[in-house]
Length: 286
Image (cartoon, rainbow, N blue to C red; front, side, top):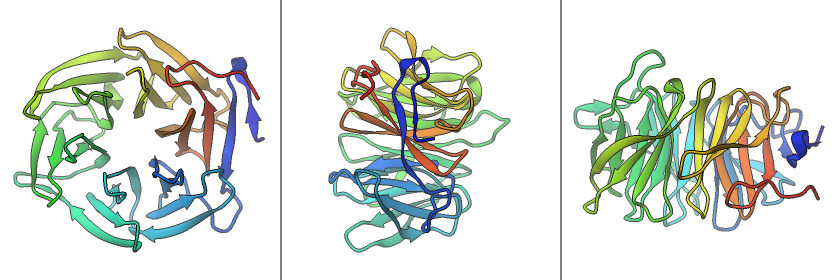
């Protein structure tokens, strides 16, 4: 199955690594570089680079762990959260050199570093999911030299995906086991301000986030297998869904490649493409 248009929502498998060599092993994180290449991570630490059209892929490096979220900095280097090592790694893309970036800050060692995101100042924000059954801190922030602090102590109920508003004034946080998307004000000095709910999502377990040009928030729902759009007034619409969990198979993190919304699928071996405009409206099937 390479195309699915349930409820007239156009989706397709961009690349399928179920039986190929190299295989794509249960990807969770996903990011797109300036050349349009798609990067994702595997459950054995693989860091994959996929051609922009999904026609080929390769393993560039390996953490020997379990890759979670990933994001590019302003220099084009890739930062990867790793669950096994409870650490964030940095991949210098130009040389394919992988190095340990951080295992936490003074007073807070990572338990489950889950997702990285960069602000306009070049600071790296990382969510720590803490525990599946216990709320805790939080969101950490790092300078380029690796020094940092706890930016927001929460508590968060499994802090997961992060995304900044287009103007950088708000950081959105997916709280998976509270079934909610939180919005935290970023003060003019870069510190954390007030925390509020953008949306609560009964029955939805949000994972990854991405923000459209209009400021609306796209949400990858690990369970059930859906991708949602949340407008700034909290209105929730379905962008893509798959009750069979094949085309969308426990989607986790999201990334834009032009007007294509890409999602990794932790439940299978492929990357899915959903054709949307940046306000979350599905485009007509091709």
